[in-house]
Image (tube, rainbow, N blue to C red; front, side, top):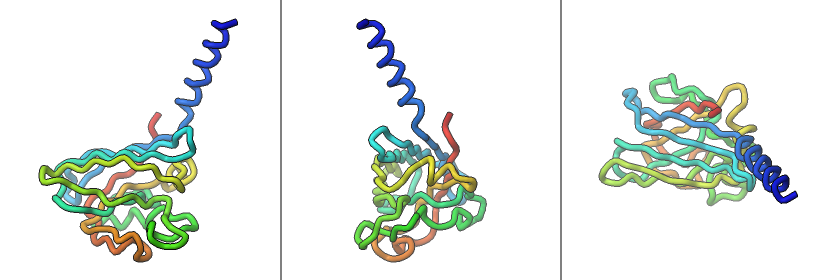
Length: 167
């Protein structure tokens, strides 16, 4: 009986570990230089977890967001559309915020590296990122003020990556 219980439990854990929706994006700058990757996964708790690992970036603080369209083809990355917003407002400092695709600003060190892990309580990878037009990661030149509509007054888009489903 104990062997059966352990085997059944191991099987359930394996199923739950493999059933979470997960997407990844290779991020590039406007010149096509690869900067790193972003991974977003639905966790068993119901929160999405985003992991950002980027290099060769301009030093400073930069806004980062998840955008509604998986298309980085425009020179200024405008083809990625707006933030994944749902029915929420932009920014953690406003009533009704934040958007599901809003993320905290990324601090890039002198060496050009920027890394962050963040839980996104209003994002569902399956629903918000695996729809017919996909989703993208976008990094801005400036800082997100966490309140200006619709995108935090964050400036030009300087990097972008199209998400693909991870198998």
